[in-house]
Image 1 (cartoon, rainbow, N blue to C red):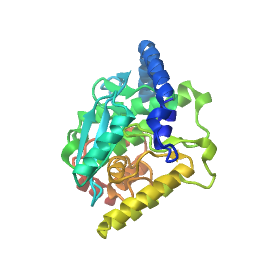
Image 2: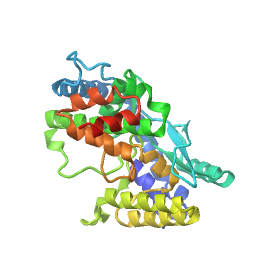
Image 3: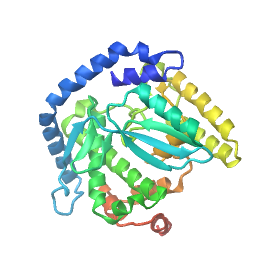
Image 4: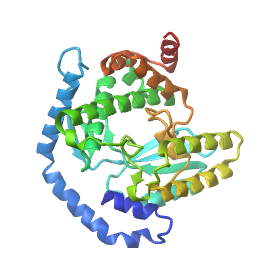
Length: 334
């Protein structure tokens, strides 16, 4: 239902999404209330399964995950992401009310953009690396496991040099988020193999797993077999970067809207594609072709994982780094 609601507000052919979604929003609220009543048992099961996978992968030297795997499924706060229009950079992110509806979201984005020279986007987040971690409600077991593992990785890194330097720079944020995305994907898949083998995806999951978790809505019925979302988004980012470098801001924004509609036509229902979108999603550079474009930091993190004998070795190495320069020196030393 959340996907359907997002789809209504993303569809360029729907003139009044608020009026078109009244009944759907009421049903969604009732369903969310019922799910919250049954969450405690499910959380205990998932925590135990993720912990078992972590032990099997020999991630902690002690034999037990530390910190212990703890999370709570809840309705997470939304996040307002702000980037300069003339460049792609996370200038600020602000937590918002979890219950904020799409009408107010669109109004807030429009207000920020009309009163400032910044690009704005309100995103749903899939998890928050507090302790216990907060994870969004979802019926997708693959996404849930990966998100729980992703946030546990942040908890793991938070007490080590890499995590302690998370906020030093956009590059350090990219190092942390990319490492957590890589680990989350590997741990999540291990849990699926151990306990839910019949649910293992036969094809790669829908892209953009994280806004620390937001998924661009994906309509399988519309997908062309020849359409590669990540590669197309990568191409889009490169073109936008070039236009902004040439100070062609309006041309870049027109191009992004054209591309958004192109993604829509191919089954990817992105509500808004702008500088703030890339500033947020660009930090999750666990795949070579993505919204990160030609970001060298994400590429270096991926290279470190490829050169590590195991996920445990990778996390042990990267967790001790405190700057991108240390990462580049390490990669160049191989």
